[in-house]
Length: 206
Image (cartoon, rainbow, N blue to C red; front, side, top):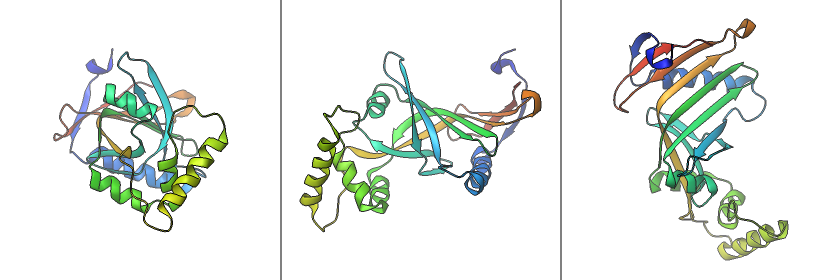
């Protein structure tokens, strides 16, 4: 029996999985010693070739899950070709995992500007200096560019580069996974066809 044919266990409101995620995330921040906000981001290019890396969650609400990056990076290029992506949180101490899938779109400029302004100045300069995912001959290439942009902006405000900003993954599928004895894990799946609708829920075999 596949997931599509598995029995539904209910229909829950628009906020339900986000409320559950908020509870699990708060627990993770209490017990995980490093980067409870770290998540694997999986993307694919137009040919379907996948790529995965770790990024940091910078915000979430019923609209979706937000992260920031260089739009001209490899991940940015893949998202331009194929707007679907997946996220995965694994909290080892909690023995819990959350898997999220959906469509990704850029956040608006004002939201990216606000977050960029909150970053340490060194990180702001780094966003200008790093030609992300491009080859360099050595560390000096990066240090030279950092020095160049440090001199360019002096003591003034560092504006957000146009090539840098946020993405929001709008989920249509969220799975909550909790460790069970003898690998009899607990899995609860939320799915929806419309971002404005509620969620169908199922329990899955481990």
